[in-house]
Amino acid sequence: AQKITQTQPGMFVQEKEAVTLDCTYDTSDPSYGLFWYKQPSSGEMIFLIYQGSYDQQNATEGRYSLNFQKARKSANLVISASQLGDSAMYFCAMREVFGEAAGNKLTFGGGTRVLVKP
Amino acid sequence: ETGVTQTPRHLVMGMTNKKSLKCEQHLGHNAMYWYKQSAKKPLELMFVYNFKEQTENNSVPSRFSPECPNSSHLFLHLHTLQPEDSALYLCASSQEVRGSGNTIYFGEGSWLTVV
Image (cartoon, rainbow over all chains, first blue to last red; front, top):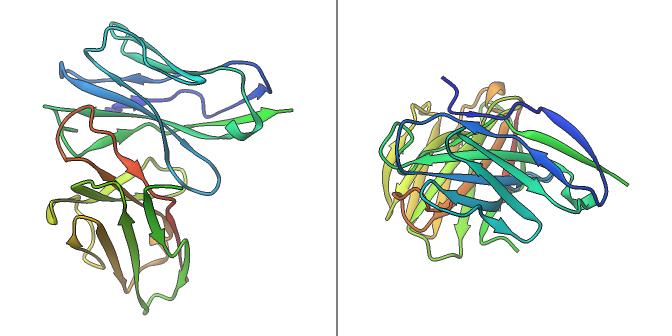
């Protein structure tokens, strides 16, 4: 079964507008972490934001915020005021503590390609 | 500047060649990883090293041979590869292996083409 699902293979967004990237996950573990990474065409995987399963508040990092809905098992990334440099692939990932993906295994979704239009 | 540096960034090799990918992390981390990213496939974990000891080999063919001489350096030795091994190879590091909040930081990747 898919652990991480990103249903949007690609999307366009107008510069300066906000965009929401969807991510749903599947786990039976009580303790887990959710991560978002950005991968430009150069290849580097850049860490953006982290949300812990026990965190009471949604994570925010600058223009990035994570809309964490635990009951629905979703962790959507919101990018506000999009910039041309935001054009990249975005990956959602999960790390479980006790389950199959425990410890060193970070399970990635298939990614969403974002293209920001001027 | 990334805290994880990979060289070379691009490598083209024949199926009979022997080459190596190098990774160095400047973050003071204790765990290092190799991931493989093929076209249209999710990232695949290949190897994990924790305090220089290999703790994970994700059923990787023996034509890929990792080496971790210390906590800051990680190599991936390549020999008799196949064209389907062409991919982006990403090195990563984290403070430790365990813990759900333990962020993994990646390098810029090495683009490998096997001809």
